[in-house]
Length: 519
RNA sequence: GAGCCCGUAGCUCAGCGGUAGAGCAUUCGCCUUUUAAGCGAGGGGCCCUGGGUUCGAAUCCCAGCGGGCUCACCA
Image 1: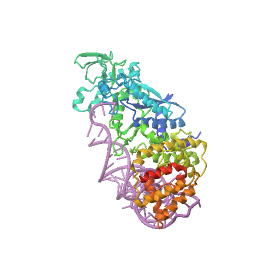
Image 2: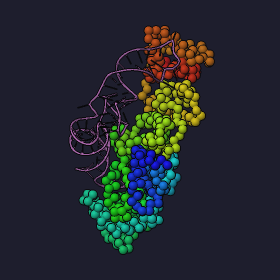
Image 3: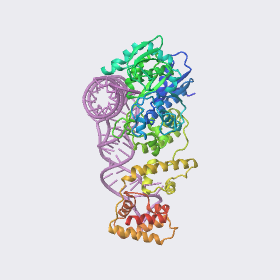
Image 4: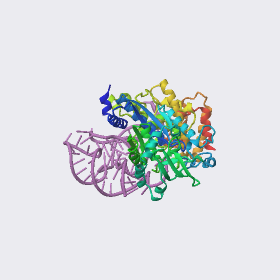
């Protein structure tokens, strides 16, 4: 219906979707548009992989709006690739290190839960993707090679062997040129992926010959899973085999994409529409990588922030290098809430520019959490408690409108997140100071007065007690007295209104809290 | 060497053709309380430089100067 709206939309996923539409208009019979994201299961799924799937999915959703052609999303796992390095955080270091150079899919999973090491990592990725309810088709490289699904392309590469070598060799150093081959035979003896020079090629029979680990002359078919392709050739082969129309990649792969595009001309000249995105940086501005273990993982983000806040972060400015660190989470949480509220009142055209439109594929939820995450963090810091009920009671006092039922569970969710964030990033920096002798006496007085009240003491009465004690020790500057209490009780210069806090916190807890400060 | 990104308030950044913005920091004012979980008000800018396009440029284009990252072994 709103075709013009979609055409004029300036949000990046729409720009990409329009690129695809233009691209497929050149081919006569396009029945299904295929999006690909690649994954190397050499360790835990990386947040970058995840970002790629999320963003690709956003483009796909926009494409669905501007075209009637059906779509699919392939998540391709390169699990026939060899294990090169044992990830530092993997629990079975010694066991895994014996499988260097073996295909990831033939390395056992030492946790005993999965068929193979690759299977374990593939499943971790799927778990994350399912959490976001993506609609995708998972394809295993190993399965495809073994089933002969790539055979036609493999033979084509063999036919054009010289041309393809001619593209790659100039990009390599001299030493590497001597050993390079686009085909990596799987050793018939050990099962390792071999990086050996090809001595003889027989195009008619689809056979190559090489010397194996023991310098023994071996012949093998290039088809049927007997050989794997070097990755840049592999990439180009996939575009053709799987008929890929769209694929993103990080900027580190820009030269590789260009090279694979050159190679693709000798397969079926299938080169997808491509977008390169900037890499995520750690707090020092360096590339986040699996091997370094710097920056943030998906799990770490989700420990302190919602799935939606993570999606928002991924949506924003994919072509700009961004620091991905813990301190991004509260901002992203608040920005999400802001955008959600903006979406409710925006016109149809500007709605398409709103990140939440893309995050939720147009099905924007009506409710979000009722309080900004940063405000909640202030509150949790001020209260200095892990008691969810106490926090919730205070939120209710703060909110002008009564809490809607739908918001209640959202609130519970973010209270838990804020508590995690508080414990990890705020609490360690708070420094409660010890009271001076004069202050100690005042606090003892406060304790005694509170003790003499019954349980039903109101917030105003608590407040009155605090004031009366304050007047005695600092009649000229009551503000100072309150600051003093905040510093001693919470390690901060400001905090909640103490009368209300004491009331909600409960008499016994208050007395306990006060007594702790004078010991 | 090649490619990509970034130069906007003291700091971190948003804005990306139509009056220069936010958070933090800073200055001042405000508690026997209409929620101090702070609140209110202010100061602070040749939007890196120079050209171009335009009625109009922080925004688009070109050139330059800074800063950063990535790739040139593997993926």
